[in-house]
Length: 176
Image 1: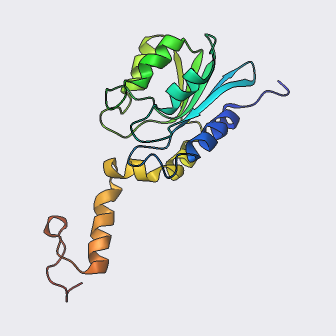
Image 2: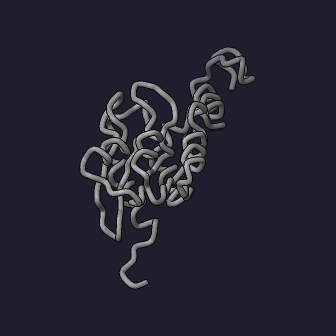
């Protein structure tokens, strides 16, 4: 259909929102959200600071969202109580048409649970839209739960020639 924007167009808008949190959200992830209905962006939000409302909540609170709107979120909505209530509850209450998620949250407290809860409520969930770009954008959030952390520690220890026995590195400053 001419003039219709594909999902990656709207996810790119959400990623632009997420980038606003570059220096204010660590150790939390940088997340962006846009809400679309009939090819019009109705709302947008981003996770502005650690401990503050998440991107989805900021978007929901910015304007009246009609049922059936599509949500584009760069990271799976949280499904656990931390400093804030679960975003997935607010999204379910908003009665969206579809939820587009760039990537699952690697945090073991979330890791697919938010997506599963939305699917159980009959919400269509589409995963993987611009996933690579989001992975690159917020690699620091994924690091603690990825296999890359031990490799980075090993490399750092090799460069500094320090003792890190749990990773099988040699002892002493003189040895590589």
